[in-house]
Image 1 (cartoon, rainbow, N blue to C red):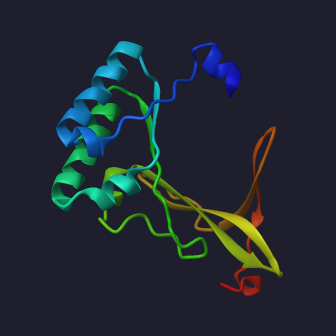
Image 2 (cartoon, rainbow, N blue to C red):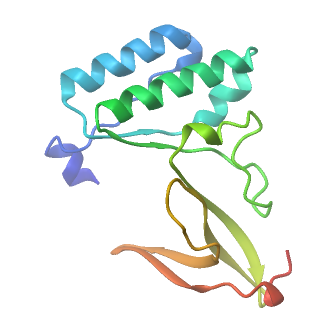
Length: 157
């Protein structure tokens, strides 16, 4: 990651929607994207913003507007959502905003055969038939590996 930062291929910024407010935050994001000719964009995470907004509809409208504008500009966008219970079922958010995303990938931990494993599931893939399997994955220095299907019979949770 250091190499990408040094070469100007990766830029990490903290822009607080709570401090700026929704409208200024959206303007700042779009201004940055235009100036820097961004092709891929990540908001990590929308969870803290969701919990601080009193008007859920304004929060949904904000995310919808950001997502649609980035989509219009053909910018690959990832929104991350924190799941506070490490072993809970795959849940997107309390605000029910899955309509905003074309694809949703859920990551969680499972207990399987007396081990804690990382599990990945495709919750949504708009317009295509996708696997409904829960699969184990590993993150290593050389990348991410998607492993075999997790057998429900062996899961404790």
